[in-house]
Length: 274
Image (cartoon, rainbow, N blue to C red; front, side):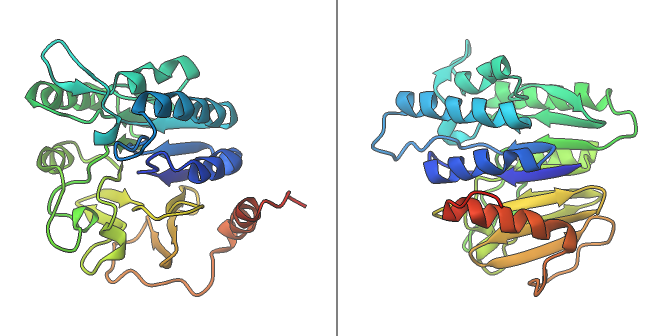
């Protein structure tokens, strides 16, 4: 299985264009929250209309898994806690989103909503407990916008902005991978990183950069490798080996990913595939 992982696109339409154009290269596209940008001059309601169209286009090309982030909240539930109602409605496009756990091609995915208060937080805990009962020995992947607290994936260069309950849930349930975002700077600052390992659980945060393509991670579970692409360079980790730091910069791309890189660069340049 080959996965494309992005987060924090924040209504950057050239980045959405890029994801749409390369989505068909992957078995699953994972978008770990913050689709919208509350600082944009574009009204958030108009943003949701545009982003829903992009999501529909991606879902027409491959399986799509996503979750809400703090910029995506557009309503309040019965208890007055903020929720991303529009994210919860993406199931109409066949998208796995907030509050759902679904097995896709042998992998169990759990998409967690952004929690704004204790009731939503407790619902996530119950969601994870229920999903744990569905484990059958295959991989279990979580999508949770905020990375775990006290992890290099949640370090912004000055302090941690991670989710403390998530760190506890990882310790309890030990999923195979957690995909996050939220802390844009983590992969680019000293002591931060795009990757962490907590016990047996891999944690990824692709970070955020401007322009297309977005910073992104490509994972191939048959090759047992994850490769991070950004303007700051390319790094990789082996999923079947312990995590070693510092994660080295690659001087040559793994053979399995070279073709994708060429095609993605063509998309950025506006060239049609040969």
